[in-house]
Length: 422
Image (cartoon, rainbow, N blue to C red; front, side):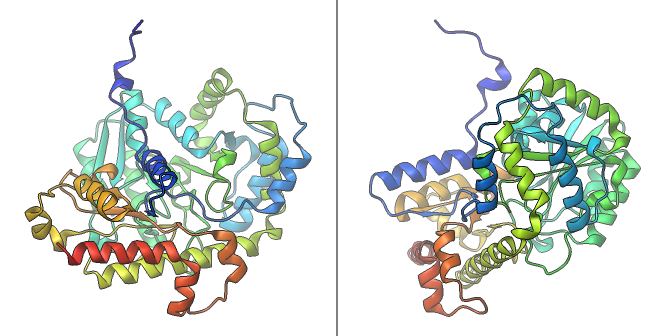
């Protein structure tokens, strides 16, 4: 029996990030030594506070309210106010099974085209495809750290002035590690307001920021049209908990009412034990704040090490400012790669993984053309618990880097060797 399948699903491939993660795991099971630069999973253990919250509430078996556990939403409002200066009420907050699912729900509900800076996270486009929605990548420039500018957004919106538009803005950014400052967001907000653009501000990496500045959210400058999404997966190192939070302002009440209905007919409510665990994270955040700050310091050291090595290899790479990603490109080796028969980013990624055991994702997975030689590199292939136990702080010596981040060092050495032999 071969059932008919929705044609929008037939051409959908497995998420690039999950695919390379499974590929590398299989290679390691086969005994190959692989530098895993392809998957952005937090490197640290789940904070014990969250684990205790889960353990103590494992017996909670009731369906919770569709919008989420009220004390959790109250605690999250307090967290947003104290940490980011964002003022919302409990009726603005939604709890979902990961921010990824919540973003999909909004993309599904809102009519019109989806605008996404290129490069952007791999799943935004496929989610739009599932809805039959047109994705319009807005190509950004390396010289501007691949950050969307108001001018680029204005040009795109002007060409589609009569259409409703949904913009996804990820800050700090996956795949580049870029962080928008207040002035940049203020200018983008002005354009969004002029064209009535609905914005999803994906702030899942908000606390992994290396700039030393307070986190800036476009919701501060465009509160009436901005939906904020975040969750436990990155800063709280709890990706497997699959719990996301979304903020929808009262000015977008029609979306709140629609989302309640969709949730009631799909996942009903997020797992009760997980919501109680999340309650500990947000209501007792001061108890784990220092732990998260130290984790961020370690992420910064790992990212800066990779950035330094990439520049030494003559790769073009903006300096990472947050999250745990870098986006180097191999343009300076384009001619040598062409002589080897490598013309596309995916060919380069496959060859690097096959020949040197270094896994990363090509720029084409992030809405660049096939011939783009950019690469998304994740800086988290290290044992976070061991690194934190040994962490000396301050400027690291070469010996300390080799001890703390052996897979990062190995991956860079192999990349360098690959390039030298072209």
